[in-house]
Length: 128
Image 1: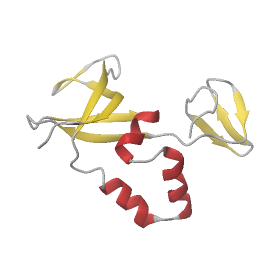
Image 2 (image 1 turned 135 degrees about the vertical axis):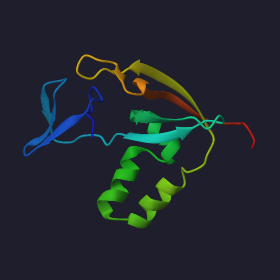
Image 3 (image 1 turned 60 degrees about the vertical axis):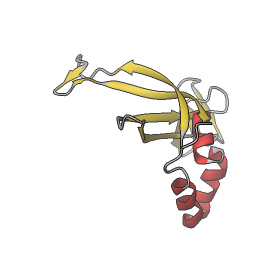
Image 4 (image 1 turned 90 degrees about the vertical axis):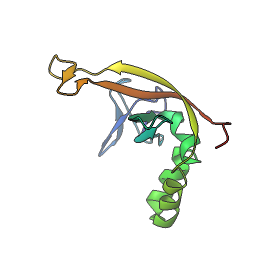
């Protein structure tokens, strides 16, 4: 769930939703996409890509409020179909990549750690 004003994550409290960025309490919050997916390219290299906000809508085929409503209604068949319909499709992504640090280090046994976040997504026009 996200703040209506700044679109940042809100905390669900007994009196409503609290936005830490705005410092305000709201009665309602807006459903927002926040998920990760394993993405492969043609070289068979894969990464975990994080989708935030509106970047998730083209992938999932609906906006977050529609999907949230299905989940709240307990419509597990539609939820499962929506998720499975995303498998094995070709997309083009504009990514934001950042070097991830943990306890002051950006290295682990496998090398540097990167965080990949989707900035924009386009349905690919490449035929298979």
